[in-house]
Amino acid sequence: MIVGTWPEDAGGPIFIRGYHSRAYEDLIAAYYEDAVLLLKQGYEPIGQHYVDGQPGWLRPIIATLLVPFLVGILMWAMLLLERPVGTLTVTYVRRAATK
Picture 1 (cartoon, rainbow, N blue to C red):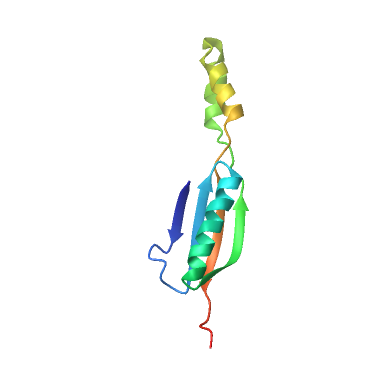
Picture 2: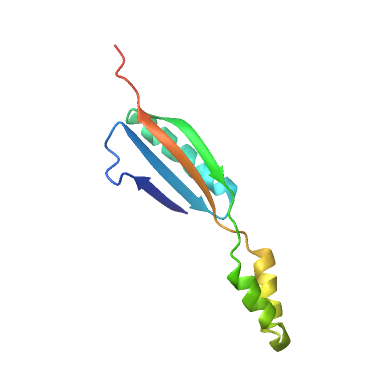
């Protein structure tokens, strides 16, 4: 699980956090953990965007070229079983102080 924050200091009124993982369930679990911690610091999520991972085009071409050497068959098996990395992007905003 990789988590990135923009801007890096994340001390302003608005910041964006990106979660990257191969499993959607891991992304949601990390988001919920962060949301609870950030809610205690005065931030609340105002928007989410999920993008499913896209497989690259170079690895299938290489695997196809290596099929006559039997290495390509193993590469194709790995490509079919491996899930691309998805990204969940969440925008947080500092809520106004309660009176």
